[in-house]
Image 1 (cartoon, rainbow, N blue to C red):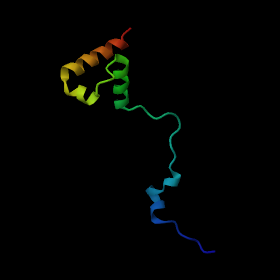
Image 2 (image 1 turned 90 degrees about the vertical axis):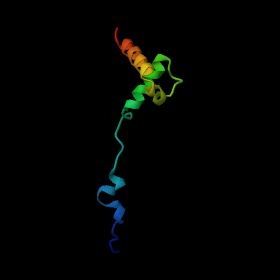
Image 3 (image 1 turned 180 degrees about the vertical axis):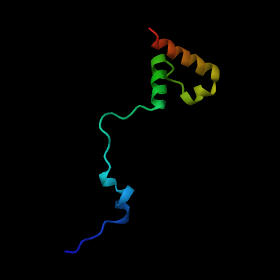
Image 4 (image 1 turned 135 degrees about the vertical axis):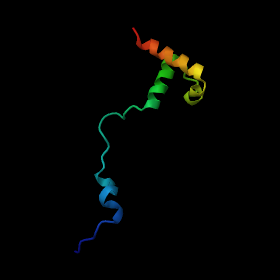
Length: 71
């Protein structure tokens, strides 16, 4: 039986059969931290993108979160 070459998309950097998912839970992103802080402070109903547009509200949230970390 003759050898059948691999298709061009399976060679080099496009070979997905060799790619493996990293072990453990997914890494936490910056956006995930923002959403988690909003839940902890009770501002969960607001969209964080809209919150960032208002500098005074954003600063109030950042100060509130920073005070949560200080014992």
